[in-house]
Structures are given as C-alpha cells and as structure tokens.
Image (cartoon, rainbow, N blue to C red):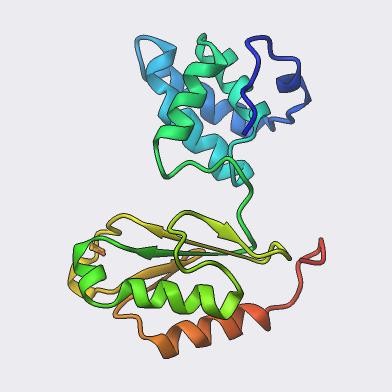
Length: 181
Ligand code: FES
C-alpha cells in the first residue's frame, strides 16, 4: 500500500453516506479525545467499504485529528484490517492451536489447492477473477468445535474436507451479482 500523504485531497473523493458519517460521529463522541475512537472508526469504515483504502485512512485521520501515518500504523498492525478489497466469497480458517491440531491447516491447503492459490501463504490471497479470498486467522472463539472456518457470514464447525469442497461448489454456482462477479 502506498503511504497516504499528510494532506488529504484524496479523502475528498471518498463518498461517505450520511448514515456512516453519523455512526462515526457517535463512536467518536464516546471518547474524551477523538483519537481514542480510532479502532472503532476503522471498523466502521471497513464494514462499509469492505477494506481500508488510502482515501478511507486519510478521511479517518482528518476526523480523528491525527496524521494519516498514525492511522495507517493501526490499519497495518492489526490483522483484522484489510488494505485490499476481498473477493466476493471470503474464507477465514482458524489456525490457532485447537483448530490446527484438528486439521485446519489441511483445510486451508485444500481450499488453496482447489482455487489455485498458494497453500504456503497464510495471509489473505484472492483469486485472479476476484471471486475468492482465503486466509488463515486467529482463534474464532469456537475451539470446542474445531476445526472452524467462516465463508462470509456462514460459520462452519467441525469442518471436513468434503464440506469445504461443497462450500466451494455452492459459491461457484451462486448467481452473479449485479456487477457480474
Ligand atoms: S482455536 Fe480455532 S476457534 Fe479457537
């Protein structure tokens, strides 16, 4: 990702709908200093846009009264934030101990193999057609049903290789979205 400049002309290109602006203002108002709401604001922006663009980081910095670099440091430090748009179908596989012992790394490798991605890469990878993103993540708080994974908002417990194959096929057969993806 390019480093955002301290000025924020690009942030002016960002279209923030009134509901998002209101949500951000409400979060900032909870803290004595606006900068205290930085993580909350980044979550709100990522929830809306799907990722944190340079423009979003610059906009957040302006709202929080800090330099864009300070926001960028947060956005790149915490693994839950993304600087690239995810695919339409986003698989998150838990790699923490219980799930790793129960086979989650093999599930990740299988997904990558089926989708033409690199099984050795643990970070987010997106297929060339932009349809699938696969990544390993930390504990998803369901260790007793390991191994677990998300596909978008669908949570899969005690996942098996066969379930993973079925999920891929369901995604592939999903009707295209309005943008053709
Ligand atoms: S270790 Fe996977 S959900 Fe906790």
